Amino acid sequence: MELIRTLPIVLAIASLAALGTPAAGQDAQDLSPNAYKTRIIDPKSPPMPFPPGRWARTPVLPIEFRSPDKMTEKDAEVEADGESSIRERVNFVGLEFNQGKWSYQQIVCPVFPRHVLLKFTRNNGRGDESVFTASIPRMGEGRVRIIPILRRGYSLFSPAPINALTISAFNHIRTEEHPTYPPDWLATGMCYAALAGAHPQISLIADSTEAEKFSTGVAATLEIPVEGGAVVKFLDVAARPQPMQWTMIFDKKGRLLKAEHTATRNTLPSGLPPTITDVHGTPLPPTVDVGGQSNP
Image 1 (cartoon, rainbow, N blue to C red):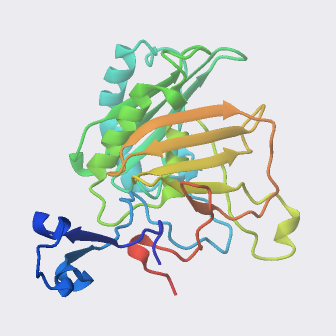
Image 2 (tube, helix red, strand yellow):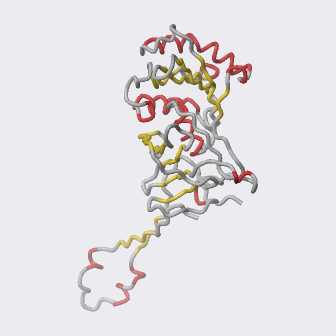
Image 3 (cartoon, one colour):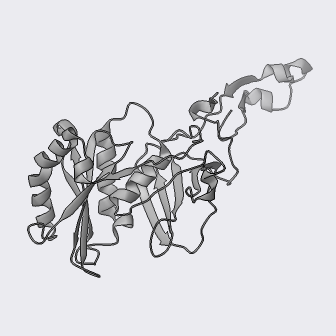
C-alpha cells in the first residue's frame, strides 16, 4: 500500500481546433472523449531516507554503552590507534585533554558499524564536568571526529544536541558508513542523541505480563512529510532531571537538517510501540515498508 495516497493524474491534450466552435458539417463524434489523447502519470511515494520496517515485539536496546574492559579486542585497538588524533583535535578546541583524569565508554551504535564511537568524561565534582564524544573510522576509511559537549560544566558553543557542528559531524559519519541497506530510523535518532552527550535507554514492548510491571521504554514516531524526508521524534524518559523530547528533521537523502532538544514534564506509559504517521498525523499500518510493500 502507498504511504501517502495520491490519485492518478489524467492529462487531456487537445488541439486548438478541438477547443473552438465546431465548423459547419463537422461530425459531432470528433468532440467525443475518444478524440482526446490521455496520459496516465503513476503516483509516487515521497522519497524516504528510512524504511518504517516492522515494530519490535520484544525489548530492544538500539545502542549500548560499554566500559573499556568490555570492548572487543579489535575495537580497543582502533581506540588506541586513534587516540593521538583525538588528543590533537580535543586540545585544539581547548578541552584540556592533557590535564586531569579522563575516562571513556564505547557507544555501540548498530547503524554505524564502520566506526568506533566513544564518550570521554572528566569529572572534577559538581558543576565541573568536561565531556566530548569521538568517532574513529575502522580501517582508516574516513577521519577522526570529535563533538565537544561540555568544558568544565559549560557548553563550548551552543548546546551540543542542537549545535550545527554536531549535526555536521553526524552527517559526515553517516556518509563514511556507505550503508548497503536503509538504516533503522529509531536507532539513528538514538545514536545522534548519544553522540550529542545523552545516555538514552529505550526498549519498545514488554514480551510478557511480568515484564510489563517495569518501565520498558518510550513512544517514538516517524513522520513522513508529503515532499519526502522524515521527522524522527522520541521522548527520553531516562534523562535527568527531566525527560527530554528529541526531534530530528531529515531531508530526502537522509541528511540531518535540524535537531531539537527540549525538557518536558510529560511522561508516557511504558509499553507503547513506535508509530509511523503521514504529514497529517494519520497513523500508518505497522507493516508498511518502502515502496508500498508489506512485511509478512
